[in-house]
Image 1: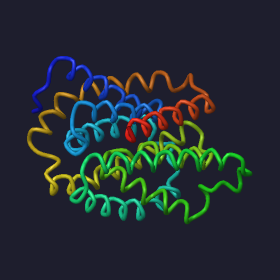
Image 2 (image 1 turned 90 degrees about the vertical axis):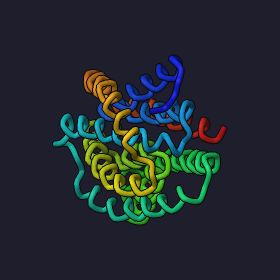
Image 3 (image 1 turned 90 degrees about the horizontal axis):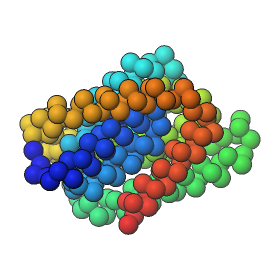
Length: 245
């Protein structure tokens, strides 16, 4: 278990609440939670501490939105995500925290810029509906989730660009992250990111994640798609700037 003061534990609790809230409510909130985690713990260590708790949130999201997934889109993404996870596992062995943060911050800003440009196109010609773009999104999401649990913004922007409704975005994302995070577990164990101490931390933090998930489920019905998109993009940009700085 990490040796932290009271304020640091409070920051971690807020981060875990936001992680749960992002799984069933506004997805961009999870990026803020991950950034708060990185304020208290090193990026590499925080990935192992967070992964079991992300799975708790994923299960809550699947229970809430399991009927709203776009399975054809998920099937197209999964092979490319697996490639990204393998690449990310190799990178974790080679780079330090600062390099990892700068790389992911740059990726997030580029993706937001592409999405904003893409909105000017006709809906039927959305870049998200092109196979090469789906492949790139899958690889980037797999890489980002393996290196820093930061695939949420990438997938949120990709699914927003695809024109999915809010519940479709949440249901597709729920199944996506449950599958991908479970796929990451053996890699994280092999890299020493998941240990007995991280599992103890996960057991203590799970109720906070579930409380956040319950709050997200309660508010999502009151948020329209335009507001949902603006909040998600705004939180993604804030997280990217935080990673770069």
